[in-house]
Amino acid sequence: MSGGAITGDARTGGATADRLLRVTDLEVRFGGRRVLSEVSFDLSAGETLGVVGESGSGKSTLARAILRLIPATLGSLVWRGRDLRTCDSSELRGLRREIQMIFQDPLGSLNPRLTAGESIAEPLRIFESALNTRQRVARVGEMLERVGLDAGMMDRYPDESSGGQCQRIGIARAMILSPKLLICDEPVSSLDVSVQGQIVNLLLDLQRDAGTALLFISHNLALVRHLSRRILVIYGGRLVEVAARDALYERPIHPYTRALLAAVPPANPWRSGAASSGLIEAEGAVRPVTGCVFRDRCPYAVALCAASVPPLEEFVPGHSVACHRAGELPPWAAQSQP
Image (cartoon, rainbow, N blue to C red; front, side, top):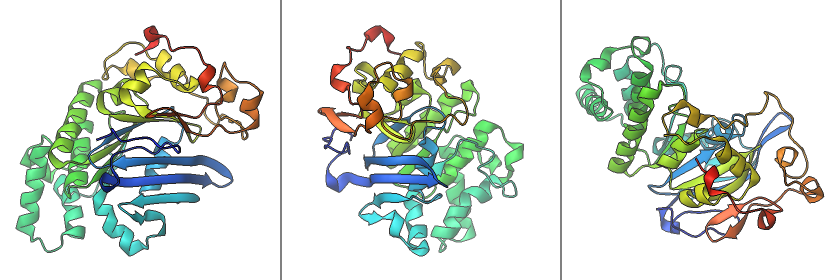
């Protein structure tokens, strides 16, 4: 469902009637530091949209801003025609049943005082209060089966379960209300490689069955390629490239995207080597406050790159990039692809 046109401001997706989310010029500041700048994109019903970038690039901040777990400074977050930034707490609470999130730390995301059954049932208590205890237990049991766990897990506490089991419980809790959008923030990065494929395949099965859109955030480029139909590349809090999956991996344009792809050795998505770009910045690294955020690390940077921020613009149909020199870069070498 990602075959719609990309406009000049790089928003993409299907027809307007299918659009779930439109993010426009989103900005987030922590104190005086701007961590997201002018982020704009669309997400359509049933779509899987990947978000890639290094640690500290703004991926998790974007996820939390969409859910209003942290406040945005500027911009709009329009969910099915309603701006989440202007919703009062009561309206926002009602809308949150449609947008759920899976967190990176499966154990830390669960309340240690609640059993698996209680955690999964909690959304039902909040949003479907008319259900009686027997009905809630039945729904929880069905959901446990859907995520590959047996009913005996219902009475277990998080510290009595493995990381993979805790993540399945978190997925069950997120999916019990059949949300229209599931935000996955590095959902397998803390799990053993042997478990990662099981969790990803589970997400795909649930998406197929429920028609849920996925916003899949990861620094594992091979995994994002396996999952996504369309991909956002973020660096320094800015979108630097937006394209359909095959176009991005076969014909990357932005120097940062090319560097990410060239640094990843050929690998399947579950190998640990596929998760490392080789470009991770030092903690607390200072990025340029003017011009292109990537210019200090870019081999193609010129004076213009320091003078002004390149806008994210459509370079070829369906493929947008924020680079002053996009039309001058040498062709991408096919042998550099992961």
